[in-house]
Length: 69
Image 1 (cartoon, helix red, strand yellow):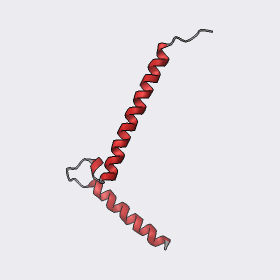
Image 2 (cartoon, one colour):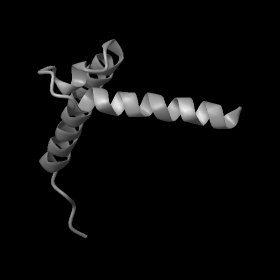
Image 3 (cartoon, helix red, strand yellow):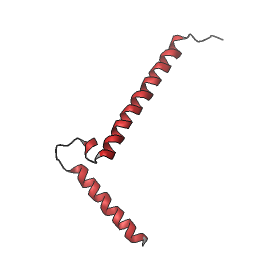
Image 4 (tube, rainbow, N blue to C red):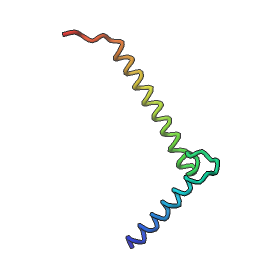
């Protein structure tokens, strides 16, 4: 039963890889359907928020002078 499950998973993986390799003029983040589009958009939002927070943190740290001991 496990071998059959692995074989089915492998065939689905191969089908998924071929879906993303064919040239059908669709952007890569839309080829997998709604799930991939949501994942792509969520990643962009997360990176934008985290990047903005990091830049603000570094600017705040740079604005305060360090004490000399």
